[in-house]
Image (cartoon, rainbow, N blue to C red; front, side):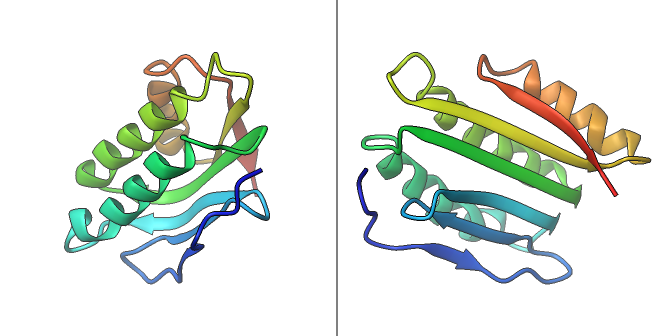
Length: 129
């Protein structure tokens, strides 16, 4: 296992999700609401971190999304993250996406299904309270 030089930890706000990318502890998650004023500034370090991570990933990567709301700009970045994770599939390393949604939130569930159909990696839709 490679130890990444840094852990990305962003504390969420009303507009920005809580983001934790920690290869050493095997935690990869984006939780909350994502409609930042500057989507590029928020997501570019995350995408760059993932590009580095996939060159020497952990044997198993489970990436959790638990979003209550996100705008279309954030959706494009989520898709970019999924495409990066897809590069791990077919290697000796395993990858899985866990897409959590409120059990009554049909919109977030539907977006998860949409994203699931864009990539060819294990993808679990999980209802949460």
